[in-house]
Image (cartoon, rainbow, N blue to C red):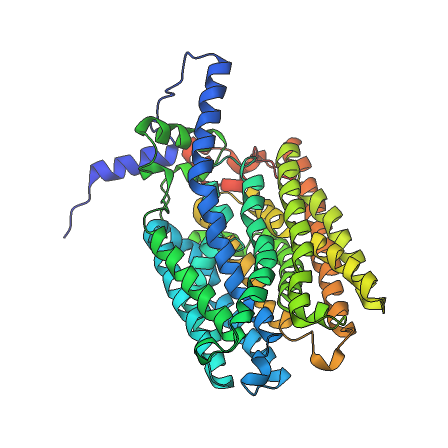
Length: 503
């Protein structure tokens, strides 16, 4: 019979009570100005190492996910002998495969380490994307679209947020009020990819006939090879977590962890995964309001990004001109995304920005629904982009801010983003060729997603969070921690009575 380890048992009890030692404050005795200068330098160092490469990775990811829309107007459907229904099926199968694996990907990211995990998956993603350029018929394309997300589901989510766990990753480095703008800058890469994708597709399509390949095939081949190359380089660029970050000195690593602990983040601790975190997420009403909101914005996002070139082409423009005209709406969305992230961090408010921005999208798609003018419809496309893109990082930052505990947050974001991506099935089928050139059905469904999911869900979430904060301020939740030690209180995560939700 195995003997118990009294020392290990004793350590477990100490940790449970919370009577453990923390890292010493290396800057104790310094003035507030000196501490602020050290903190500013540290954050700048994190920004320069983490953010630019993350943006490049997500730009490549989103470009690869949506370039089939650019390939379509370059003759993909006709060359592969597909019907419009088969083209929609190729879009749909991507999101089915993608969503099936999302809830576990943040857990795998934590357990398998980003430095190896992300580059490896990215290389596989790029290889699969490249082979889409060699498809000869509908069956080939269906197989490729199934295996692309299976090879890369974790790469995309572990970055994204949405893609979607960039907030999870950034929350392991930054305070809550710091990573909203960084998540916005990161996701603005999706808007940039829309602009860049249109320009790139217009240029690559000029290779039509080179090597016996059509222009749409070269779009897949060249963009896939670029992604694989970026993945190889990422083996030397991507870093893991603060506790073993080689680009930081031991003192700076301790400072990062102390900053997180002072921000009441469990990211500073070494949690082990337990099924308890899964059940906590499933029983938390915030998981479901987050899923409602993200369904509204993500379903709209994919419909918009997959079909924008086709929508513009049906206004009467040539394929090349439609590619180029898709650039300005994305550029405007990129700017607003960053502005919303910056202001939301400064004000520590997320819900009001979701509500206000979603109204732009509602107005835009309302105009598209009733417009017969190409000029007016193009203006409405701008409003649609402005109403969708800023809400992606803002929604996930909002969810992340209000879920505490490394694994619970990861599981919750997996459910939220997985459910949102599953609505890509809807997005793939609502803009039917039979409804061209006005696409009333597609515009109407996207309008419903924005009005009910994004706008309505944001209002509901804001009201419920505000009500819960009032109860905590009034002491109505204090009974939850009576008789508990500090360690046990910390394990409550966002259920701690002193944890106030971000509105």
